[in-house]
Image (cartoon, rainbow over the protein chains, first blue to last red):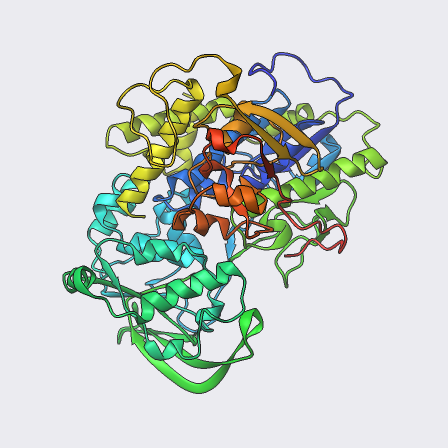
Length: 462
Length: 165
């Protein structure tokens, strides 16, 4: 990697690429490209790292170690970071295309799949995206103020995000207060009366979308599992499935069906908080209290399965079941949004249509969730991004991507931005980082996050 | 996650940091049972080193010498081996990017796999019966000459020319 100084001017002969989005997709794409090209990364917020900062659960700090790799990339002599720049508003994709040889869109999935049921907008109903954004300090979720005064919470969806939400709702305060969870979230959870969390899915135990992270839930202090035995009829880990699914099913079966003995039996007797998966249920309506002012319950349609394995389909039986609850969190998927009319967008799949990261438009590429849809862990996104970078480099080699004419790169964009908005440099982010870490030191946390764009900018330019 | 897991992970991280700075281990340093260690300074003699061979994703064989006690992830980092995306979580059992494949004979010598490692291995692309995570394999003299293959980390979707999941 090059030195930390960027004192030399870039030569006009070096191809220039810009990347929109500074989460894992943006940074891993950049990491692969900087061997051969100059890369500028644009980010809407003053702070980088996307879902690594705003999505990964506070009690998973080691997952955030990838930030060290991203930091190395950002400080490479051929890489520059421009935060606080809203592509689509402060600068258009067209203007970026004029300034760079290629543009890579890596801005992820900031929207949310709606359930599409009556009552979805009642107080007490939140998307997992917003709930996670709230406890992780995403500025746009600061005012969420979720109502945690009820006894039962129902989460729709059974992926890893649903598990994260359940775990944060039920984790002992002692564990949470040592993490980088935001102070307002910590205070709200300290007052929380939530004792029971149901994690609801349309299909059965063999179709759960979560991974063996489920083990953390099983081992969560102060909680015990409670599931419906009948849901597990016909489920066996002996079925011929790949090892990951087999081990996950084994864990589910053991948790749901094994009768606890001795110490575990004793432990469960003394524990107040309960969680469990509920299967074969789809939401049809959020039920309000008599004054129609808040959530009082959820109506669930009962399903049966047709087929088996991943292809199994949930089919309505006509039966419904009402569950009393004051908190409903819908964790059925994030969704990418279009940010600029010049970029093709598939509204059915909510992605930018592409072939191996190549958008069907000259010199335009995409990586990460915007390319494949909002599923996969960081390593998945890493591979996906390397793949897009390889496509771009191949196109440079073959001439399909024309890099013969010099392009002005960030110089042109900086001129445009002068009238519009002041970018945050990576060294400015490091001031924010330093302030957050110092504030965290004072209260035994890895960092105490700044919660508004205004505070972030103030620290950046102090 | 439970406190024990967190403590173990923290210990693994700080231990790795330490092993990178020097191969000497002071008396009384806490070590997890599966790592070998020596008391006092390592003499700089080549016979205290372990030879390790990596087969990279292009099929090329890379031979390096490493110290007993180093994890295979440590070796990749210390020797600056250019395996794209290897070791993303820095050896804290939070990813599967240090996935390595061994032959039967070597695999048996590597010892038991913890549930925690298995949980992460389950997420690895191209998982085999003789797969392990490099950050969990610590070198000993008995592993002299071991061969570790770095597998492909993603399906080559150029064949299908379709980028959707």
